[in-house]
Image 1: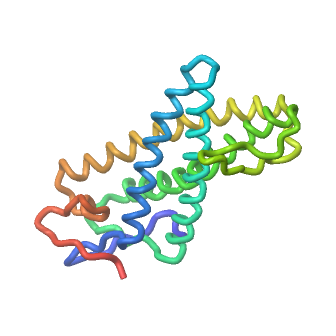
Image 2: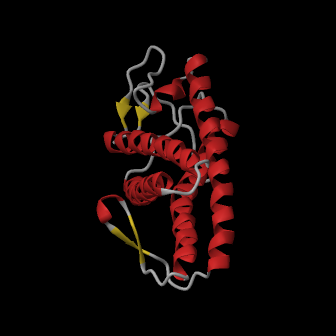
Amino acid sequence: MATVPEATPQERLLRYDNGAVLLHWLTALIVVAQFVVGFAFAGMERGAARGDLFTVHKTIGATILVLALVRLGWRLVHPPPPFPTELPRWERIASVWTHRAFYVLLIALPLTGLMAVSGGASAEGKTSTALLGGIPLPLIPGVSDDAGEAIGGIHELLVFVKLALLVLHVAAALKHQIERQLAAGRMPPFQAPGERSVPAP
C-alpha cells in the first residue's frame, strides 16, 4: 500500500466500486448512530434505562468491528480507484492517512470497549456480556478491574479522535464538492462536475 498513490489522468473519473460504496455508507450510518447512543448513555444515571442503552452500544460496537473487518478485506481485494491528477499531492497524503486512521479506529474502539467491559465483569466471574437479543459476546480473559478502567479511559479518548477525523473527512468532501473538484465524484452519490464517473475495475 503506497504512502502517496500516484495520480492518474482520467477521461472518465474512476470511482469506488459498488461494494466499497455500500460498505462506506453503511459504516458511516452505524458510526453516527454509535456516537448518538454513546454520548446519550454516558450522560445518564445508572439504572435500567442506562443498562438497556449500554446493551445497544455494545451491540453496535460489535457490529462495527465485524463490518470494519469485512471492509478491510474488501479493500485488500479491491484496491481504491486512482486519484485524478487535479488532486494536489498534500491532499492525497491527507486522504491516505485519514483512511488508514479510520480503519485503525474502527477496529481499536470496539476492542478497547470490550476490554473495558471485560475488566469490569472479571470481578463478577462473568465470561460473556449480553448483546441485543441475549446474544453472548465472549469477554477477554485476564483483564483486571483496574486495567479495564484504564483502557476505558483510552476508549473515551479514541472516541474524540475518531469524531475529529470524521469532521475532517466530511469537511474535505464538502470542500471538493463546493470547489467542484473532479475528486468529488470518487464516492457516490457525489458527482464530478460535468463528468460521468464509472466504477473502478
